[in-house]
Length: 202
DNA sequence: AGCACGATTAACT
DNA sequence: GTTAATCGTGCTC
View: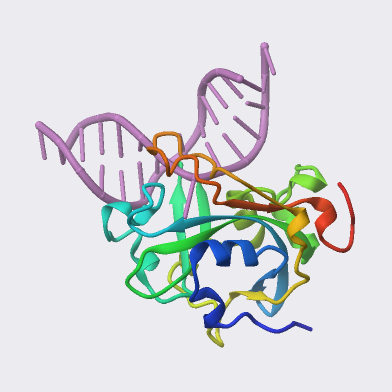
């Protein structure tokens, strides 16, 4: 089991291209040898210190240091006092850019995922950046880890690429106090349910 | 040492 | 559509 892992070269590209191309790829979390995960269906690009929506805007701090690491580094941070959010670092070391993982369609480890998201309906298991972290057991312990390394506990495998026709773009979410144009640039990417093989529309 | 804020979610009306 | 929950971080005093 397990397909081809995405290499560091995949992440060492323009952040918007990585955000777009991550759609349809398979996010995998290894836990005690077991696999949890699913196909990536929503992402957002955060591109460098000039992007005033990006955590890299005000320089390097203890919290965001992973954002400056090599492409393929995992940047996980805590938000709103209760949620973990996971990003994949892009471009090059020393340049603060990453793609926020905002949604997956669960495929593996459904029993664990359902348990961690107990009480939520089937379509609401991993349809948000904090929800997917909770479902996959991702928290600050994984911050700074390398998704391209042999020992990675979280990584990305090649999955079925969606057609352009099934991809929507729009403004990033939750940047209420960010100035224009950064607040409105269409750097959020999402696949329509019909755009991936399997279950079909939901 | 104190404080305002946030790349969210779930439960409301 | 609105709002409370909740707390680490980073900035100000």
